[in-house]
Image (cartoon, rainbow, N blue to C red):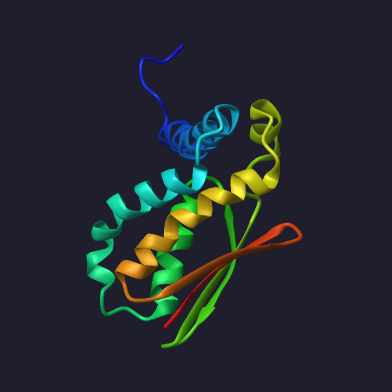
Amino acid sequence: MADTFMPEELQRQAQVNAAIIPLTTIAYFRERGLSVADWTTFVGERFAPSWSELQRATPHVVARAAARNVVSAGARLVRPTGDADRGEAVLAEWPDPQFLTLLGLPLADADAFLAVFAPTAAYLHLRFAARREGEQLHLTFTR
């Protein structure tokens, strides 16, 4: 056994943690009858100011930044599209079905976490919508 970890090991563990911690929190809230929506709003409002460098960015750039966050938690970017008025990131393979099984979460409950981007969009004077079409997630930011 080596005394250090390979960068690839650490990256994979960071992706697992980035996905499983919010999903576990959602499972905790659901089991106790607490509001997931209140929590995602709280989290989104606290992190929104960290996006201040995107105040003048197009919705396309903002959608890519949001996608980067979800990809860092294990999703796969299918395609980013957009322009000055609308940006959309299409993602797949999130969350890992094993996590949902482990936590007893339906997919819709996991997708509730994506509302965390709504306060950020509002902070940037944009609108946000998330929807699932089959296996793909669509994150959309518009003026």
